[in-house]
Length: 164
Image: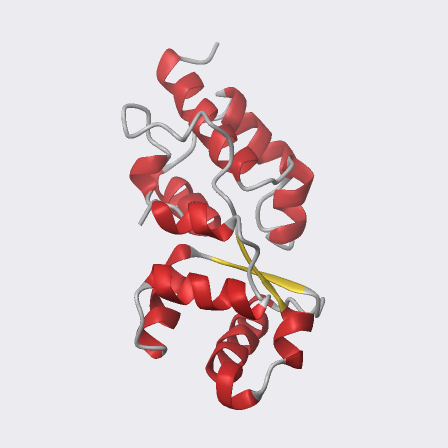
């Protein structure tokens, strides 16, 4: 029988996964089999103990600090998922290189690292937006506005930047 702590940890894992719009099967697909749906599900139910190493690896996979997964830390927002920062790669390809060349190179690097070449959209993390802001010599909110104006980011991205 799972302990209360295991159940709380599992609930945190599930909350983070669902905030990112991932099903258990989606986790398995996105991780290319590194994280099996049945194993992640057993962690989330508290049926299986997760080692510190595995927890750190899961946090890295989800792109969150480990403390976000631990019970007693700051709770995931109950208001719904944090808006995703999704770059429209098709729109990006239409922009002049002098305007969006740095963003295009950055996106291509992320695609290469992930092996993700769907060519339509690319999800980025808030840390990526911070790095891009440095490249463009702007604040993250200024860059977000510019990318929205270019049609590369959805206006909902403004909410993601508010949490910086």
